[in-house]
Length: 604
Ligand code: ADP
Image (cartoon, rainbow, N blue to C red; front, top):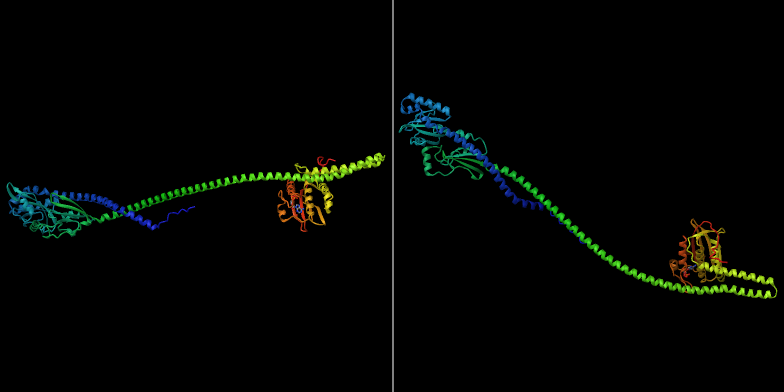
C-alpha cells in the first residue's frame, strides 16, 4: 500500500514572517486613514477654537470702533478743542475721558488737536500721560484728519503695550477741530489663549506676528517684507523693532488653520503640533494592526482547517480506493480460487466415481474369490458328514436287511448327529455373513468368543495353535450386536491365524479380558510377526493389506473398526513388547440380558 506523506510542517517563525510581510502593506493605508481621521477631528476642534477666538477678538474691537465718532460729538470735548487754551475746559475733558474709559474698559482715550498734539487724555493724571504729546506720525491720526476712520496696530510708545487704535476726526462743519482716539489694550487677548499645545498666531497686514501664545514668535516676520512695508514700519513704529526677524517655524511640524479678519487685515492662525496626532494614530495603528493580525491568524486558522479537511477527504477517498482495489483483487482471487475448487471438486468427484467403480469391481472380484474359497470350504465341511451320512445310511439298510434293528437304529442316531453338525456349520456361516444394523443390545461375551473360535477351530487345530484363555467364569455383558461382535471376533482371530501361519512352531494365541471403568477390554494376542510399521498406521484404512490379493482384501480391520465404533466401543491395535500383535476390543458394559441365540442365526 502506498504511504501517504503528510504535509511537511513549516517552521512557525516562517509563517509569522510571512504574516508580518502580508500585514505591512495593510498598515500603511491604516496609518493614512487614522491620520486623516484624527487630523479631521483636530482640525474641527481647532476650527471651533479659532472661531471662538476670532469672535472674541472681533467683539473686543467692534466694541470700541464706534466710540471715537460718538465721543467726538460730546460738547465738552468739542469745546476743549475749540478753546484749547482754556485750562478748565481741558481739565473737564480729561475727567470726562477718564470717566468714559472707566465705563468702556478701553485702555486710553485721548483728544488731539489738528496738529497731532494731545490736548486731553484719560491718563492725564498718570506719569506716562499722553497730554501734550504729539502723535501726528501715527497713521490713525493721518487717516482721521483725512476724514476716514483711523485704525492702527502699534506698540504704545510710552506703555510698550500692544494696542489697537481707533481714531475719528472731530469736525465743525468743514473744519477739522482735531481727532478723538481710543486705544484698546490687546495684551490681554493674548493671555486669554491659555496654556495649550495649540498655539495662536495673529499676523498683521505686513505678515508680522502681533499676537501669539508663543513669546518667541512675537514681532517676527512670517514672510519677507518689501521696501514699502519696511518704510512704513520705520515711519509708524508699530513694533519694538524696525526690522522684524523671520519667524522660526517649521511648517512640517504644525497643522495650521488661518482666518482672515477683513476689518483689520489680520490673519488669525491656530497651529496644532503634529505630535498631537501621533499618539491616537499610534494607538489606532496598534489596535488596527492587532485586529488585522487577529483576522489574518483567524483566516490562517480557517485555511489550515480547510486544508486539513481537504487532506482528510483526499486520504479517505484514497483509502477507499485502495480498499475497493483490494476488495476487487480479493474478489478476483476468490473467483479464481472458486473456479479452481470447482474444477478440483469435479476432478475429485470423477476420481471418486472411478474409485467407487474400481472398488465395486474389486468387491465383486473379492466376492467371487470369497465365494470360490467359501464354496470350497463349505463343500469340504459338508462333504465329510454327507459321506459319513451316506455310509451310515447304507449300513443301516444292510443292518435292517439282516434284522439287526438295534445296530441300524444306532446308525440312524449317528446320522441325526451329523445333520446337527451340518446345520451348525451352516448357521455359523450365516451368522458370519449377516449384517446387523440394530442398535446395541446386551450381549454375553464368552459365548460370542466360543462361536468365533468354533468357526475357526479346524484351522487352528491344523496349525497346532495353542490357545490360552484368561476369561472370568461369570458371563461378561457388553453393549454390542450378537452378529457384529462375532463378525469382529472372527475377523480378528482369522487375522491372528494368518499371522501365525507365517511363523514356525510354537504358535500361540492368548485371549484375556480386563474389567475397566466403562466396561471390558478384551485382549487378543498372538506371537506372530506383529504389525509392520506401516500396518500400525494404516491398518484401519479400507483395502490396506500386506497380504496377496488371494489372501486378503484389506477390509477386515476397517470393517471391525467401523462396527466397534457403531457399537460405542473401540478397536485398538499394537505390538506386544514380547513380540506379536495385540488387539484390544474396548467394549462398554451392559446390563445383564437373556442369553439367547438369534433364531435367525442358529437354525438347528
Ligand atoms: P487383510 O487381513 O485382508 O489383509 P485386514 O484389514 O484384516 O485385511 O488387515 C490389514 C493388515 O493388518 C493385514 O494385511 C496385516 O498386515 C495386518 N494385520 C492384521 N492382523 C494382524 C496380526 N494379528 N498380526 C500381524 N499383522 C496383522
